[in-house]
Length: 197
Image (tube, rainbow, N blue to C red; front, side):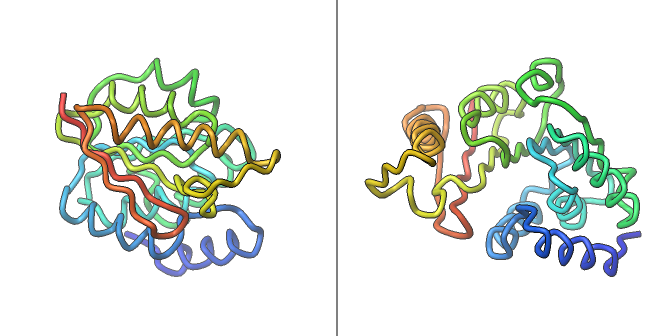
């Protein structure tokens, strides 16, 4: 049973503590996608405190399974607590560790892969996502426009690496003939990629 009250508390806490969670307008789009696609298996790269994983369960079929990976041990612990409080712990499997190391150990097919972790690793996540996704499945990448820097001639040193990696990601998903990609200027940019194998 989805606990609405605990879910709202989690959202409020995350915002107050500046923990990056999925933005409302991005979530609205993802909700539409989930209600249309009706995924049975979702892979999430970047759990944070479990907010997005809880959202995925909320907007999918009751038997959906979300496998999610979090690098930060403290956040992973919080996420385990949070999904329990919200009542979605039966649907959410949280793995703690480095996604670059964990992804190659995974098998089976996912309907949706959601990428929201280290910007510098988006291309690695994409490669693994393509391997793990079913034919016709969707790879969603959040924050691909990164405060608008990715599409501008922004070149400040601090964010330069992230910007470069995100540009590479966009180039890959838009130029690969097996991928059909739409980039939406909602939230901090959402790339929706359908994979044909």
